[in-house]
Length: 295
Image (tube, rainbow, N blue to C red):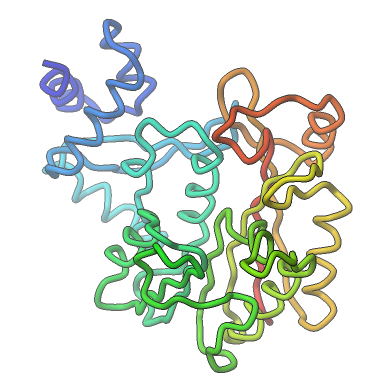
């Protein structure tokens, strides 16, 4: 049985998914990831630490048996609090969520701090539910969405949320801002819906708070959502800078040869120029992840 084999290998030494895949040999990566997820859910194995993939620029989890994980966590505790494990949310996922969720996990605030966190466009997001569980006892996590069919906490328009000024320590907006103001019920699109939203995010952020935003980066086409090229992304960031003093971090990722990897903006621009076609369930072949910090 695949799960027994994984447990047997991890009893000898912690390993990442690629090492396990090479050692097992007679299974697919998809089946391996599903088995790892099942073992994590039953708390038989856990993520002991992470390693940086030089090829993809992403962090790869290294698994160990649960009973041997205490020492690993103690050694990590010297550097800071434990990190949200998003890998069990991504089994079978090939879209930009692979890099967006990893970006969130890296820049999510410490679960040791009392905080109010807002997730915009959460709908039925499994990420928002995982964040809520991860920060239980310390965080108040609010989930908003404008869609009638969502199971969020409050149905609310992110362009004019109604929250008071400077109430949240962190705001998360993953693959959402490109949809805001597009295809609204009146039939008249709000071209500046994204700009209004980022200004609203920073209005409700506390000083020292942060916002995590991701958008599709590619060739702008007439679609039911926005896709940002270099000019459009600069316009979005400029709108933020007009009213607030912030520190911004931007990371770009591209889908190439069947996998996502971190890239420079010029590489993403080149892929845009080549007009590479994205799979139907992708927003685009490249995406941008942005961290904003309000000073």
